[in-house]
Image (cartoon, rainbow, N blue to C red; front, side, top):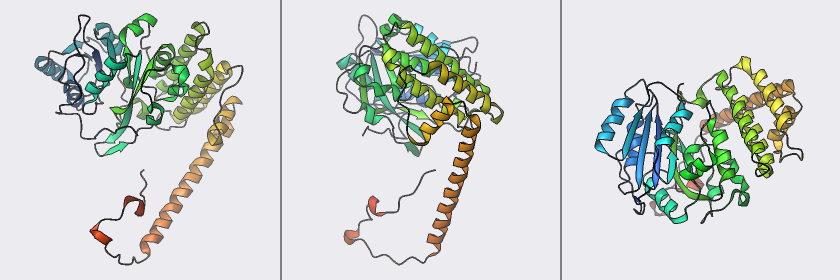
Length: 401
């Protein structure tokens, strides 16, 4: 199990780690690129979590993408305090992708790490990452992450089982399931000359990481994994792409078109990844389509039609590993362009979900109405073990352009 970041870590902390990263005649080991827009409330925590690393081998490039709040003053203050921080102030807003590209163009480190300015790194992450980079020298280092709803609620990392057991760099063909990891540039630290060699940059529009992450992993000769939560992704209730209802979610189709164009342009080198990429694409489309916080109701039919068109356009000749269960049924309905049946399935699922929730509440009320027997003290004065207690259920930011 990957080590989980502490919700209180980050701000005003000083991380640990063996200080093996060194400044060479070619520059620092690691460049951290931080695009900044509209994150005045979170920016100090982000910067502190990076700059808390006291060792050599680090530079931070913050790109102020014409942020309308107090981010410029915060960046200037931190740049005066720490010479490792370089601040670039853009005269006009260019969006997340181009802000990252601008920061990358100014980076001098052997490796580059993109960190969103409303997120933060757990204590000691920079030191651990630099240590691993110096030791294994991969093209790409993947780190685990945790999604943080608030300072007291941390979702357990979902990708640690894919990174477990990686003690030395591998090729993607040795572990193809790495393509199923979160499509995030922020969890993938990359050798800068590899990005320059293949000419990989961020494309404009939403869901830019869908294109970047897959091309990055397919083209890398060596990939290493760090089975440690080294990135905390803040789940904001508003202001992020995943919580913004807009027709801009249609921009995801252009990103996957660029991805499959890249597969075709590779001269056969990526063809064996096509079935897995196709499955990932359809799954991604269905997540967007099924989330009422993303697509306006008036746009769902048109979005489904686009999904069905991409299914027919990109379906591999030899098929693909279709998922089972309800997910597989959704894939089948997309393949047959059956929006009516898909919408009916969604309504049935919503009704059964509400019924199950109502039944659960009724059972809980019945249980609460039964007088409870007085319990005896646990021998030895200890509390009941966690397994003895009744389990309780639990119920990215966009950058303007």
